[in-house]
Image 1 (cartoon, rainbow, N blue to C red):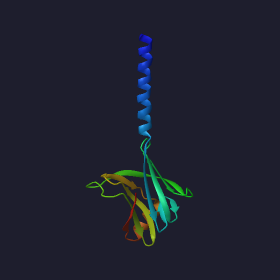
Image 2: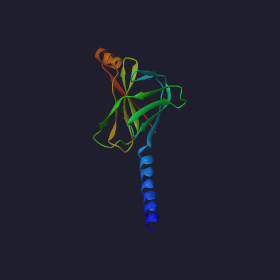
Image 3: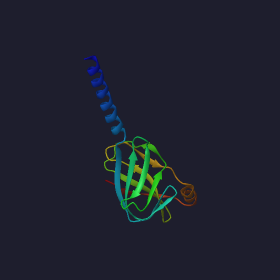
Image 4: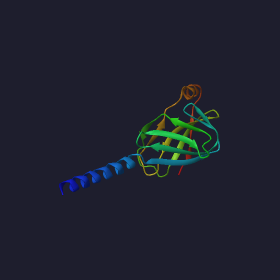
Length: 138
């Protein structure tokens, strides 16, 4: 009887650990479309439909065209807004006619991601004043 109870307890513990592990690997995905090419870090991305995926287990962000023809891992840090976002959106910085992926915001959250600027973006920022452009995401 003690052996049966012990094995039952071990089974319950393993089930709970498996569920927690699966929950930790759940990802957040956003989809957006641009009509312009842009830089995501050092990667030059064409205009098109994209998906950003956050692996909550690692905190890493993956940007990928929905056709999977182009992709890039993003170096980003968490950032906060004053209030929760009314909608999901992607913010780009534009210097001249060059766009750079800047921020990723998720609907209903105050937190988002700030993509760290590449050396190329930093050079562009020194040469001209940037503007921002938002693209809706879902």
